[in-house]
Length: 171
Image (cartoon, rainbow, N blue to C red; front, top):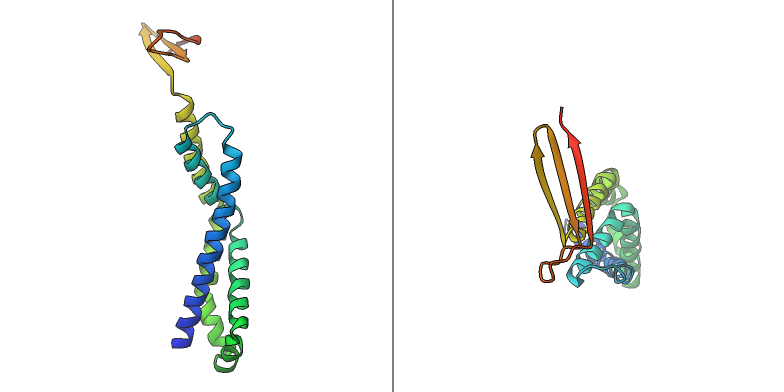
């Protein structure tokens, strides 16, 4: 029993190392890609973090494969793999690995939903940042609704860069 707990701890340690390194690499490249945007630096950091998590949802199997390779490499480097082969039966090894496989299988099945949720969060963040300096006024006259949009509104100078007006008839 202690050998199985030891192996699970070793695998999760390898998983944490691989996920940390992968996240850092994805974050740095996403940060470099987002630095040209006209957002605040905190928004860029948040977007880069969301992009990094979204990459994990696109290819969760890469994390499992890297973690498993690091786990095997670590066991080989200290000759622990020979001990595991000697004392564990293949059936017991499968019982140890099954919860990890089930977790990654669940993530693989739900990756579309996770990716969509992260994309919604990103689009809400981007659209809310784009609406800064935009004022929308809605007025009604009888059965008509009038939408007036002031874009690029600067309260200090009392200037407007763009003015749009839409009129919709309600039935």
